[in-house]
Amino acid sequence: MDSSVIVNLIVETELTEFAEKVLEDTPLLTSETVVDESVYVIIRKLFSLKGVKNRFEVKKRLHTPEGQEVIDEAIELVMGLIEEVDVAILTDADVYITIATMKKYSLLPHDARIVATMLQNGVKRLATFDDDFRPIPGLVLLPKDYWDSR
Image (cartoon, rainbow, N blue to C red; front, top):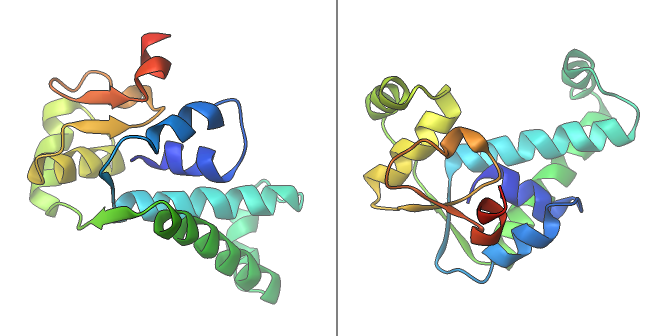
């Protein structure tokens, strides 16, 4: 499960209904990188609700009591969802496997680490709304009805 799905399960959007369909498919797996990305995106969204849109301003505010509250809330939201729907967290792939995956599939580092982690663990299905994973041969993108409509 990619961060795009986790975030859309936490924050209601036009993709939330598709994201909820992913929960019917088990086992549910994610990676350490996806957890990090999800917490980061939720931190940004929580600050955005407070009118803070600039990432540099977000970084400054993290060092305030308000920032600590936002960090705590983001962690609670992400980890709470992961625990509630019983998502197992896979250990990230080795950096050298990630680099090889980056080069082979022309991916950015985090996407490459997600794919490398999947390959290392024999996972072939990825719940995501991110088009960057589309060209990876042998990877089945979920939710099926979302990808079939594109």
